[in-house]
Length: 130
Image (cartoon, rainbow, N blue to C red):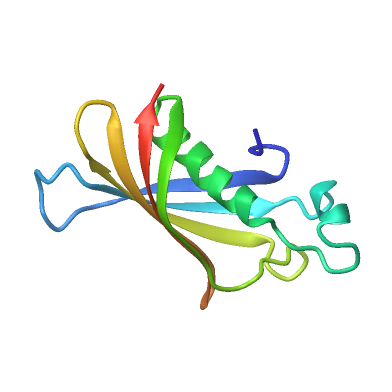
């Protein structure tokens, strides 16, 4: 688990929907990276970068917290890394999450990791409750 070690959640905000009754929910999460975490010492010395796999795991962990269930990510249909996240330059991140129910115990998730005008990662996948 990366939460409370690699990053700290500052706030989770539910975003109201334009269309009621769709079952779709949107959230905006602000978080702070822990730039002294050991992962940055090896990835990469002198030029710390948040690994892509950690970004995906952050999305899964945040989804667990928001949805209140233990979740697996059995499918990631699209992941685009658009820019490197250096925790010394961008310690504050925003994660936008959109959940669409896809049947019993399954959700489609769309996520975007940003800071200011920078978009670092975009992702679409399927979450399943355990």
